[in-house]
Image 1 (tube, rainbow, N blue to C red):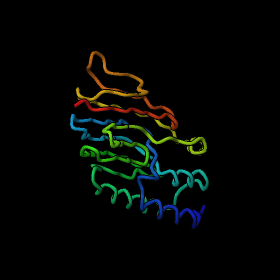
Image 2: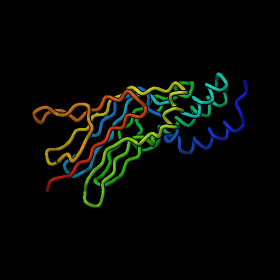
Image 3: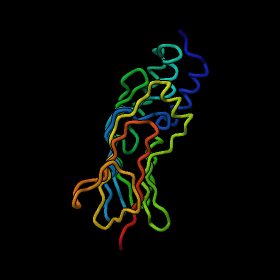
Image 4: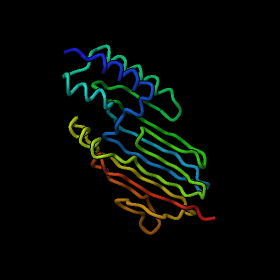
Length: 195
């Protein structure tokens, strides 16, 4: 089976913003927040290239040339700031290790899924991108599933304004944590720092 020219163009275009085409699958993610509002985002796990998964479902496989192109993009990705490891495992899947420190107020948009923003009032929002119903159906049709955890560790001077965590610290110890088992499950947290 031959991969369409349109897919080859999509792979090339997606390669320019590879992380925007990757969907986390099995992973552990963590955000460690410091008292000054700086933080480190950490991710270890797998991710799937959505367009490659679509082509595999349609054509049954990827060509050697497309596999090589995706592998080359992983090598480029591993040289980007914050990426400790990006290995192409074949069939559109990657193994990633990310350790990305950020200064106070510096935004994060990792894998076009995990977001951290701080507004003008100093309120930090940690969340995942909202998945629309159409996107959810498309990912489910491709057989892409999500099985991961997200933990957020906060300093003592951080006051939680809102959250939808699966579990919370006990007696001030531990982290806010989410067990993520669906593509449309959206962790959210807002934090204000005490002066």
